[in-house]
Image (cartoon, rainbow, N blue to C red):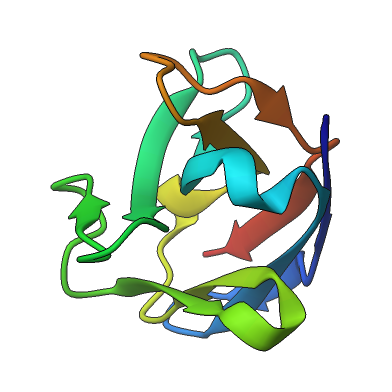
Length: 120
């Protein structure tokens, strides 16, 4: 079991910044990757960024956020962050932290989400 708790969402103006945090607990050693998804109102959930926690630590970014968002991890705190800069109204969504276990092809555990609203 892995528990994920997000924080850091809020209301920001276009061009502003926010940093989301996701604290992980539980079966940390069984994790393969941590990721951030988002779900805009009325749309499907999409993967924004992911970070592999195994040796090598590869990252992935959706094209829509490349150059504006950065995923990072603090091993000591078992926390993954999503630094979001140059925010746009289209970034408005509920952001979810997710954990993928070793041997799994999909994300297995999800946080409850944190709302990010970018005003025009």
